[in-house]
Structure formats: C-alpha cells, structure tokens
Picture 1 (cartoon, rainbow, N blue to C red):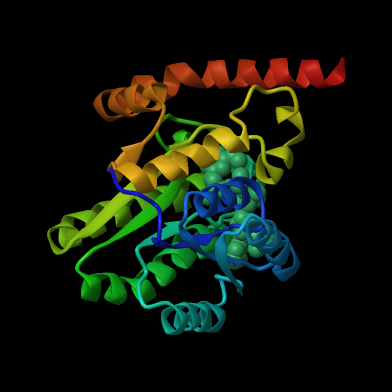
Picture 2 (tube, rainbow, N blue to C red):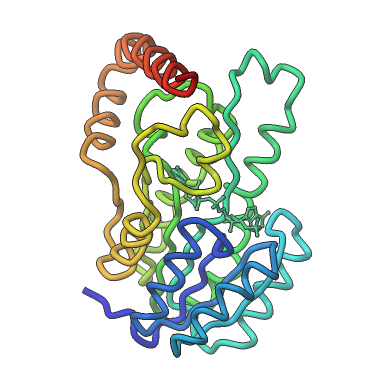
Length: 267
Ligand SMILES: NC(=O)c1ccc[n+]([C@@H]2O[C@H](COP(=O)([O-])OP(=O)(O)OC[C@H]3O[C@@H](n4cnc5c(N)ncnc54)[C@H](OP(=O)(O)O)[C@@H]3O)[C@@H](O)[C@H]2O)c1
C-alpha cells in the first residue's frame, strides 16, 4: 500500500466530473496535484478549493488534442517538479451515436481518438522519461466497463478506450521491470457532465463522483493492474470465450433497457 503524501500526481480532466473530485481527495491525502484541462477558469476554481483546504496544487490549462499545447504543458510540469510519481490520463470525451448515423461523420472517430487515446499516449510519452530516471512511476489510464461487454451505440468512444487499454498492456509488459506500474480503471456509468449529455440516461442508476474518485485514490494506493466491477470482469471473460453468442444475445437486452429509459423520461 502506497501513501499519497508527498507524491506528485498529474491528473488530466480535473476541471470537472470525476477528475475534479479526485483532485480534492488526493490533495486532502497530502499529494501534490498538477491539474490539466482546457478550461482555465474551472481549473482555478478547483485550485482555489484545494488551496483553501491547505493542499498543494498547480494548474496547467491545455488542450491535449493540440500537440504544441501538450508539449508545452509537459515541459512546464517537468520544469516545475523534480518528480512525477503518477500520471492519471482521465481527460476524455464521449459520443453516443449509432454507426448508421455516423456514416458521414468520420470526425466522431477522429475526435475521440484525439483526446481519449492520443492525448493520453502523448502525455505519457513526455512524462515517462522522468519516471524511468526515478526508477519508478505509475500510469493510470481511465477506461470504461463498456469495453468489457458488447455495448452498442458508442463505437467511436469505445474504440478509443480499447486502444488505450492495448497501449496500457504494452507499457506494463515492456517497462514493468523498470519500475513502471500501469493501472486501467473500468468505470461503470458515473453521474457527471459527460453522462448527463445523454438525455435518456436521466433516470439510470449510476455511481456518484465521490465513489468514482475513491476508485482513483485506490488505484494510486494499491497499484492494481485493473479496477473494475465484478460484472465487467465476468463480461470480458464471456466475451473472450464466446464473442458471437455474447454479442448476439445481449443486444435485445440493451434495446429493452433503452426503451424502458425512454418510457421513464416520457412520464
Ligand atoms: N461519466 C461516466 O459515466 C463515465 C463512465 C466510464 C468512464 N468514464 C471516464 O471517466 C473519465 C472522466 O470522465 P467524467 O465523466 O468525469 O467527464 P467530464 O466531467 O466530462 O470530464 C472530462 C474532463 O476531460 C477534460 N477534457 C476534455 N477534452 C479535453 C482536451 N481536449 N484537453 C484537455 N482536457 C480535456 C475536460 O475539461 P475541459 O473541458 O476543461 O478541457 C474535463 O475536465 C473519462 O476518461 C471518461 O471516459 C466516465
């Protein structure tokens, strides 16, 4: 079990949702937080709360889909902090759209890949040399339970998260023996600005941001290879063993779930 006290943690996507709550929790536990997101005002608001509680925090407003901004952000972090103990790649965007409605929308796939995969990989590549110099470091990559089961309607989002999971496996396999730990977090649905964008999910039961942020604290404390719900883990085993039936027989259930959620919304 690792203590957070004194650890320098770079947390992307910390201007809102799970990231903002996790930043405050980690600062309370004594970590030094480097917060990254595009919205400087929101980051300043999170920083003000951490400052007021006596925590240690720095902000780095940057659009991680812009390579120049990503490089500048990484350079500033490396210049201002002697160590980088943990990088949490949490910044992301989600798109819910049937593939048939995306036939003229290759940009859906480009936009999700750009932040969810390339933004995360880009920052990892820049901060990794410092972790290797230190002889240890941890990369926590945020994914979703939806890559563990055959969820429809999120093809662009899920493909980008699956790519990030694959990169995570390579990172662990190649650099584990040099002190690099990699954790993939498969969140279930969490009530945040991201999930609130989908109207029919208004009445869906979801994890709250406080519990989700606790998963990130656990990721840093315990450094497991994966944090996930048991249902997601069972889903990934069934999907690996029986991809055809696992996909075919679950789709009517997802359609039924959407139908019920729509009915609730109409009431
Ligand atoms: N909510 C869910 O149901 C759910 C389920 C499974 C997994 N997840 C994952 O959990 C993580 C956190 O999501 P959330 O629900 O907390 O979403 P959120 O509230 O929408 O937060 C997303 C964060 O990413 C940042 N971001 C987006 N684009 C960016 C860019 N180009 N450059 C830098 N930062 C960028 C946003 O900040 P700015 O807008 O200020 O840039 C924001 O801080 C994500 O990886 C998401 O995929 C969420």
